[in-house]
Image (cartoon, rainbow, N blue to C red):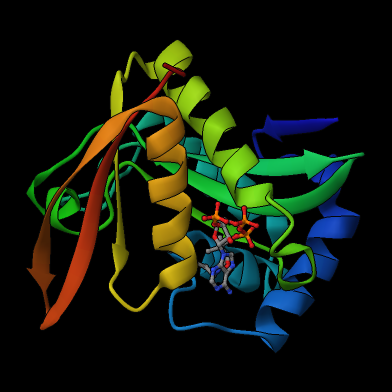
Length: 181
Ligand SMILES: CC(C)(COP(=O)(O)OP(=O)(O)OC[C@H]1O[C@@H](n2cnc3c(N)ncnc32)[C@H](O)[C@@H]1OP(=O)(O)O)[C@@H](O)C(=O)NCCC(=O)NCCS
């Protein structure tokens, strides 16, 4: 069964394999929380668990950051990917980043996992944070991510808005309802 969980040490065996894969197959679009996992693998996962929990609770946030929940997508107790869910938007996230970012391990891509995980994350956002519409953004060159957003938007409802210009590149922006039509 596919599920979203808060990061937990019981999944560390498959998480450590995932980190090896992420390092072997980097993309220009790798999300921030994956770099944190790579650091943890080099250093200490206990610090990682402490940091993600602090971010979830809004404790010791760096200037300009909003509270964030990191969720792991798990199937049959194996780590499949990560979802970062920002609890609110600020001016920066409105242009670049939005509410939700995601990454699937390279060996599990193109199997529908991100679409399934995104729906679970939207549901989590509505039930746990009261978010009714989530903003997603991606670089114009990230075809897989753009197709993901458009596909789930068409299924669940929402709207695409004008792209933003961020550091010289265009960013697609799509609002998606957090419950199915
Ligand atoms: C983007 C990413 C999360 C997609 O995950 P995935 O599990 O492979 O995606 P899915 O199998 O659920 O497919 C989602 C949609 O993207 C399309 N897609 C997936 N990989 C694709 C590719 N390499 N090229 C073109 N389209 C692709 C699928 O066809 C599907 O679209 P459809 O519903 O119109 O058919 C994954 O490629 C990844 O982790 N990339 C690196 C990190 C990243 O880019 N994160 C997003 C930052 S904004």
